[in-house]
Image 1 (cartoon, rainbow, N blue to C red):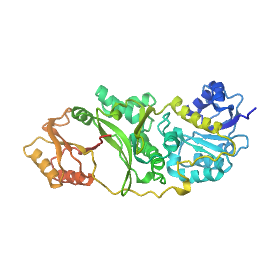
Image 2: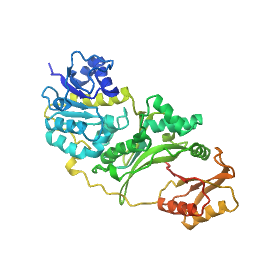
Image 3: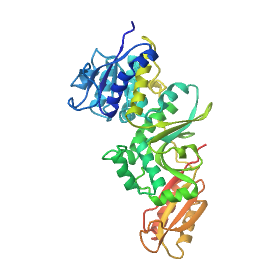
Image 4: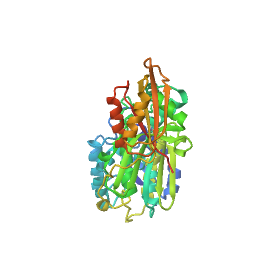
Length: 438
């Protein structure tokens, strides 16, 4: 009889508990699919007395997660603690150094230390699998690491945070403010008590950094990502975008150019007719553009116990199916030692143009002054419209909404700086990039 694959799990929150439960419920199916049993033999978490709705009677409890990471009684170490430093990092390093395969959902850890950990894993001949770290249950890591072999990737982008997508979807559908939507997301468990990591774009940036390394065979460079969140998106922006035929989404975008790699996370206006505009609620979506396949779009549940647990179990199943002595593929698709240095691309013209909303005094000449400042910076306008404010912030004010043709961000920022110096603005100008997916 083939020996069972022995699993040790650190972290028994929503995802960890779901992994234990599903491995138990699906044990017969998984044994058939993998050709060997998969058995959780040990776990570790901070609170042994907490009720988790799972049966841990026949599973060893290890108080010190580092002891579990180094245990000879496991084959696979599953890290579900989270955090880029501290015990999560120490445990993963310890497990790899002891020759254990590792499965993790920890995007922050990998975005900061992924290359160093990959070098250890490849030296030891073990797997470091992280499907659950990006886009929940969508198998995007496996697709990029294995299924797209031979393809040259030119661009990868997507909706990588369900909390932000939920908020933006509800703002449009129900006409309620960002603040109201955020409170509702927190009540439903989609957003944390401190939602900063999600709504300010940092969660998306960590995930994008991993996709960039996989797509372009370069070292991870999370610090080179331009990051802007959605906390400044108003109903006025949502309504104006809708009238112009766009939806606002928080996108992570990585593009390979002649001068290097461009990585950015920011609110983006996409045409209502595009597939990415139809991705609603907590759903995630990733688009990969290649020379052989064209555009591949993967979409599905981006968060939640079952979705993330499904990705973790998929990674465990891949290990169960591998044969002893088999030479495993590189963690990031390219051997860690051969990953190219990250080269940041020079600023270039943004092909989609920009949406600009200005809240100004309702005075004669303001409209002409705005148009003049744009012309001074060689910005061609697709449209410029004056409209009364939907929300009566102050009397005698109006919105000026502009849509530009292709231009550079530096030109737009210079024009806005001049407009602010003119003294007509009563609020900070809003600028949102427009993307036109292929």
